[in-house]
Image 1: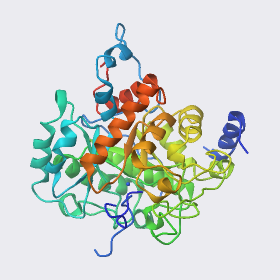
Image 2: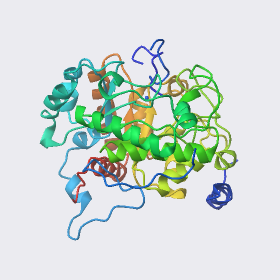
Image 3: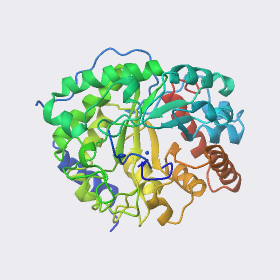
Length: 405
């Protein structure tokens, strides 16, 4: 998770896991807060304005006569690699991100606690520097409660736990749409929310990553409210990102501060995975993968670096075909696993992620190092061209700019 506490911040076969899931279903580092300031039904669909979207319910079809691999072969490796990077930027100085936008990064992640009134104009100016008119996804953490970057500009959201206790899903959807429309008007195209983790713990703090960031400890309630929040954002034309797959609510600690372990996958399947399954069934476009390890699945690695977690479970077993983001690669859990940000980025993309997030004291230098590491990994064969191109295609579809549109 992207935390204010940072300076910038028994192997199971597929059949066994799927059986457990079927039996159970029954149907950014800076998101630890700074000091200071119903019915459980799925939300109804609504007409939505044109917005970045991604086909999560199934693989995207390719128009006859178009070969995505051939199209992307005309792009340099560095251009493709840059599309997989979500670079950090301060919301009160977004023009400082111009070098990263000019380098063709696929996204920006805005940090801060109060956005300046000039943000919309600055983001519009920044978009004009994107190569080939392909601007980055601009994201932030508007979860609610103390995890909000620009409440002064887009309006306030209660903690998710408070929303679930005091509002109906329909009311949550309407509020999220209201805030989302203001976000979109400001130039924000992606929200790193909602949290679908199951928790009734205190926090968020070094021990408990979620606290009131979670809508509920009960899968049905967390699902209903999380999907309602996501639907509101989509109604507003903002891409929601559900997190933190496969669930952080029962993790042993907060991965911002060090390594943490989730329960084994069969335990997660009885509860924590259910909101994510529902999100996939409803076609939600993007998933963020958390950084706790999962016994018997990730072999001690954080899930966000694990092909078993991302490609094995999320992609193949749960059938998710949308955009996959990492949680922050600058988190202590990643460092404890022996990875710096550039090396972690290569590992994550090879494992099946499509975009990487991180925080850094010198964003342009770290962004350049990440792109260079991805390019070197392709040239050495550590990262295949096919995996690189698959990730780029997911990014472009999320932007509404598919390779073969």
